[in-house]
Amino acid sequence: MRHQKKTIKLGRTAEHRKALLANQVCSLIEHQRIKTTLAKARAVRPLAERMVTLGKNGAERHGGYTRIVKLGHRKSDSARMAFIEWVDMAEVVEEKATEEKKRKKKPAEPKAEQIEPERVEPEEQEPAEKEEEPAGEPAPPEEAKPKKRRWFGRKSSE
Image (cartoon, rainbow, N blue to C red; front, side, top):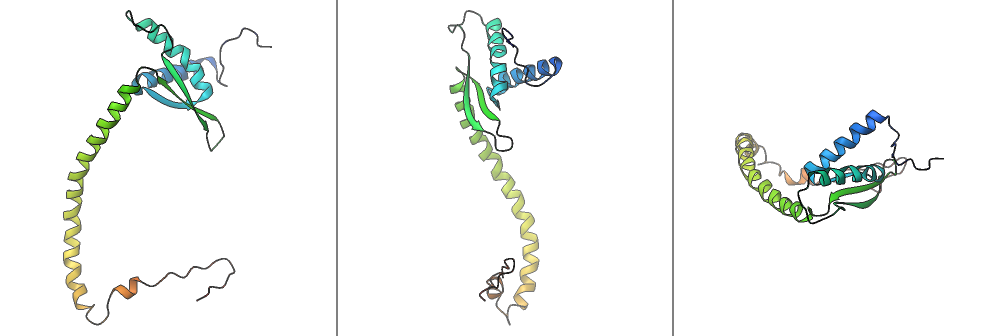
């Protein structure tokens, strides 16, 4: 029986477990929210809260710095998944998300301009050749042909 044995083993050796939890805490501090299994989130929570407690200078809150949000089961192995996040950082994460969306839109416009000149060069050469050929046959009927789909052993209606 495992009475009074608080350590969550996570199916790993002591060294591997220590490295895993340390990396999880660092990722939580860096990214404000991480997605992991529920068991790992429950193991990371006391360590993350201990780090905040050691580093605080007269903070208003006395514990309860993290929140675990259950997400459901992972498709591949049905492991229970969860977000672990800071309670007070919800406003900061939302503000950063809106700023990142604005930043992503601006660089996308110059890239589109660079791609267009590359496409223009081949199109200028091809239309000159196509103008001579399409005089006899129109191009749209060739593109409009439906694909024949063959289903295993079934005869098509066409």
